[in-house]
Image 1 (cartoon, helix red, strand yellow):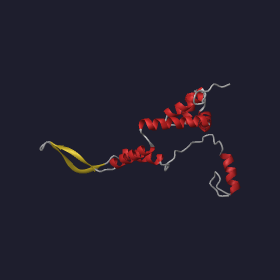
Image 2: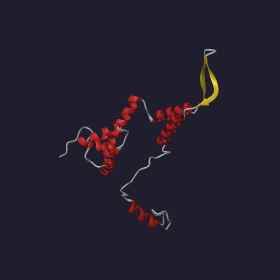
Image 3: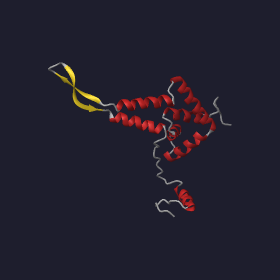
Image 4: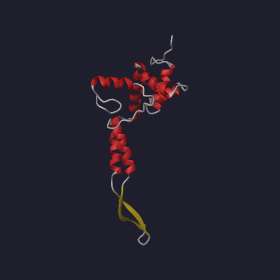
Length: 164
């Protein structure tokens, strides 16, 4: 019989869930940390399986809520602050130059803004709100033949881009 803890998780499920929370919610990395000899492909598949396990899912959700309550960092907090960062970065700030004659900083007549900060904040906002999604590589092509056959049956587009 497999030994389970108070969260009804095995030792490896517990490790996976804790690694998952610690590394930015990356299931593949969490699985590879739990099982160092696993290949990236195996880790991707089994990481998803772990996340579908009700006990693992419930534990992760519980820990995330605890962290939100403890830190007071919620999705709303992040969105509002990213919005503020974006607005600040997009403000036009005068370029100041020290005038040795007057001993004061004076505007040069040029303006600047923080485009890098604004772009990063907008990117994070977009990802948080689901506007942008990360591209998922599938180098093995797993599942594409099945998808192509389904699309063909439905009269959709095949992998060569032709309508059938």
